[in-house]
Picture 1 (cartoon, rainbow, N blue to C red):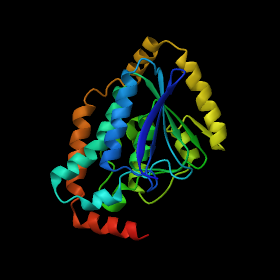
Picture 2 (cartoon, rainbow, N blue to C red):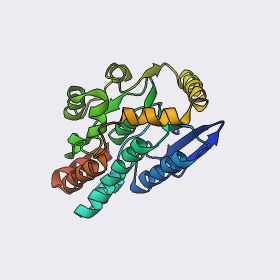
Picture 3 (cartoon, rainbow, N blue to C red):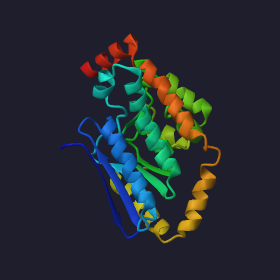
Length: 251
């Protein structure tokens, strides 16, 4: 199957689904399409709440596309690539609709950022998390603000520093990254649908105002995340990072 991002609306519930054959990783085109779908549903009066999910039964999102990372040869290209993740987080933050994330499997790097940028996050017991960026010489700079905001500085530092270790869904729930964790996807989906149906019957104005409260203090993120993208865009050019990514790709 080829990569895609698609959205549907049914009974007031907008659903965005993305897929990439390489463990739902995120090349630039995928990030751009995801931003467009988030923005489109945010403007569509027929969608009162948004569910964000990925396809497949394994990884929720493996983060940045290593194939694209290894192809970056100059700073501007690197900055543009990492700005794609900044744009996704800001689109989720700025959307007037509450966003529910469905995390069915492992979330790495940018996938953790998506989980933390959602307003309410469901997961299964298989949805362990890892911030692997430091292991390839970059660091989770772009997604750092949203992860730190959700789980606190100490827990963010733990993830960022211990960059080769997966942390369990139970750990993520304890740190408030996940609100609810279920044994099976079927159990999770039943609860997601129940909450989404309730929200679809709620006041749109009230939900939008509530979301503004949740995200108070992040008005500078358009600039902040762009600055962070520049940091990553420079580091990705290093010899250390090139060698590290090549080693990861051989595994």
